[in-house]
Length: 154
Image (cartoon, rainbow, N blue to C red; front, side, top):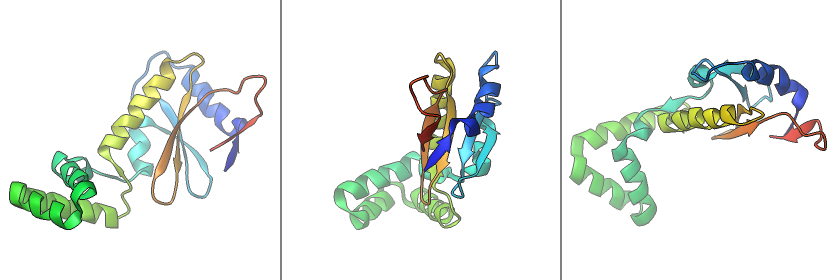
């Protein structure tokens, strides 16, 4: 998809005028309908349904084991190691996924770290989250150079 810099520039201007970085910093979410919406870093969970359970170390361990040994073996090992605690977390993670979660709390924390990186650059770059059907792309975008076009692919 292509978006014009003019769609992003007003949001970037507000970010570039900031004197300090915090969770009220501006960022942009582009939804599946290609709508450009300004939010703040603290407002990202409104647009990005996240699963806290998927960020839990036991669930992460299960996913890593499943990639190596297969889901059935990984499930058996995790139930033997962590029993009821893992079973409850897994149930919560599955419920989150069925409820539309497609990101984790860790992903949101990483998005804030990415936004900080863009804020510290000169010229500043704004965090843009492009929401896709099953995931999202995390981008840092700044004003185009004189040689660059007024549009960019997202």
